[in-house]
Length: 120
Image (cartoon, rainbow, N blue to C red; front, top):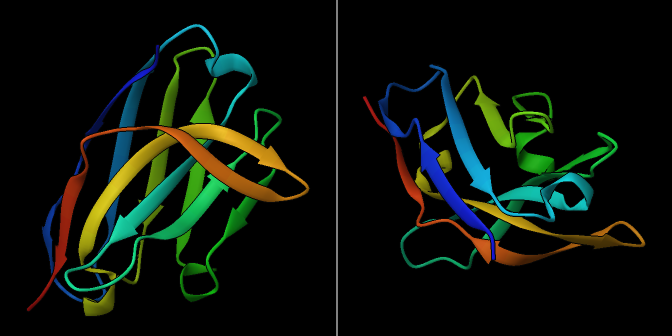
């Protein structure tokens, strides 16, 4: 079983920065891929970024150059550094643990989510 707890969400002005963190527990973390999804009101959930156990990353086109995903395998933590935030980044962000096959990420475990609101 894997438990995920997110933190770091909040209200930020357009152009600002925010760091999301996720504390994970479970026995498979060292070999699993991890990722961040988001879901805005009335919109489909989308994969923002994911990272393999070896550190390979992939990003949603709209966040490339602005968001950075990272993980600390020793501490079982996942982070998402977000900068140059836009109102369209407003969403609930979910930390996930899953697997990557042929470059495609699929989440198996989900955190409760943390709200990010970008507004002036």
